[in-house]
Length: 109
Image 1 (cartoon, helix red, strand yellow):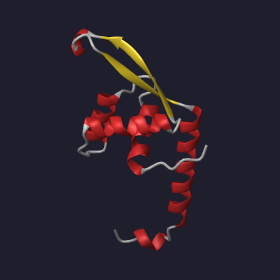
Image 2 (cartoon, helix red, strand yellow):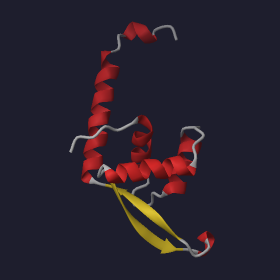
Image 3 (tube, rainbow, N blue to C red):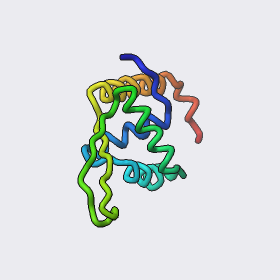
Image 4 (cartoon, rainbow, N blue to C red):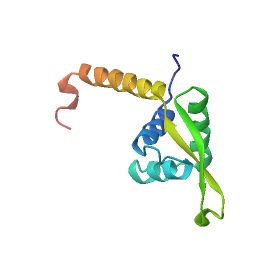
């Protein structure tokens, strides 16, 4: 399965992997805002998660409900084997391109 991965989708997928078995919409939104200092809406994260699920890069299941959430349950997202392969390919591509930049480009910064 070959499917493109947009920059925002890649960030969301990376955070699903980082938050291993604990990833859900709000936790990912908070991580993007705190770690990357980017303003992002919960709905944009949910949209990316559902696109990633359609592409087969994540799967989701409904977690238990909690008093903090008013008795509502949350949808937990987990990375799939296809998602892991896609992240590896993305990392390899980026590293290859970074390696092609002449050293002079960053001299004197």
